Length: 197
Image (cartoon, rainbow, N blue to C red):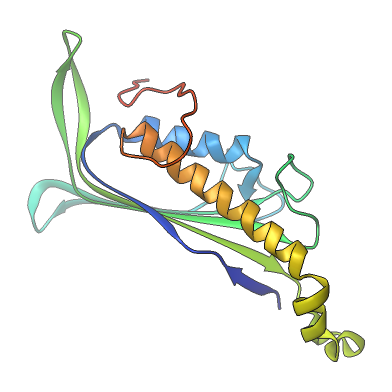
């Protein structure tokens, strides 16, 4: 049974206009570019990673309002890029989308009518580290506490820092896309808020 070490959760709360499909794609692309894939070894983030996609049409608030819930479970490839951990640790980022009171409206943009979504969206980003439980091995059982608190402490702290930075950069990318206030250095944005396919 593995041991899970939680990192502080981050979230994005947004209530305004947005286009759901490009935001969904930009977030998924960020995960793939940063070596986060499906928690199952045999699948890629492009094909899965999504364990729930539930849309409820016509809520009690109104017949045109929808509710949307999306859950993504990702793990970073330990042999991945420059900021991936070693094989002993697995970096996970769980992303839960919760959209309520969402309905489609049309706006005028650059002289054309475009369909956008309006509602309230909460995106929860939950990072955590997975490491093997050494207390099951008879020989290491007696040294487990010492091993974690002394020998692996520095390495674990570095991995926590790397994972938190990834989660913070993901939050910053989503906020920048939605044009919210961010507290990270400005990076060049290749996607517009109302990007249509």
